[in-house]
Image 1 (tube, rainbow, N blue to C red):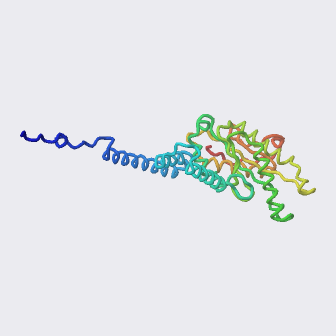
Image 2 (image 1 turned 90 degrees about the vertical axis):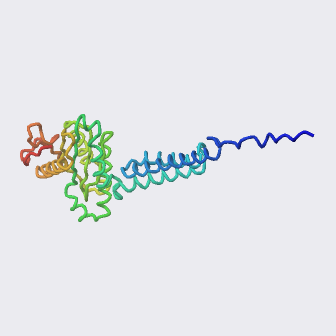
Length: 281
């Protein structure tokens, strides 16, 4: 009787793990985790810089990798979109003045810093105007603060209506507002401010009270320095604002190429126009 043959199955070597086996799966999980963490880190850094839309896109990419969200109607995607909309609404509310709905001082400071590298500013410079409501204390004293609040709201509406695309109005404090006009040539900036002054002067204030008249004084400064000196621009506009007030109010003051202070429109015929020391704007 012949000897039995060894089993062929015993001769087969054990199967080797490859990239499609458990080891490969662990490697894929590790790489996915690293990719997700990289996107989360990038999102946090973008949010720290105030780049909220870019931060959202990075965070959404990380969530999609974790959950395999390739369907637009996914509940997680819908929740992300809802949170994004709520965050955008809260952020917009945080940078608005609660009374007038114009931008607030915080937004003004932040936006001025980001405008330093704006292509339109690099090319044509930037204009900034300070606007103050004339004799506003008398309005509050005579009619009360709630009535004065309505006047502030109307003034902001008229200022906004006079601004070109890319410009914005921000409440600087009290009855004082800043108009920022990036990429605006000096003559154009003066024309915009004069148009705003006229709109306020001609507004039908009698709808609030038959005896009410509201006017504003404006100082508009311009700089072509690179990068613009924002602080000096604010100071320059403030100096010109007080020149407009000193010249009789209801006027827009600006500097001519010679450095002399002049008033725009009909107010330019006034004889007594203060001449403050020139600033390097």
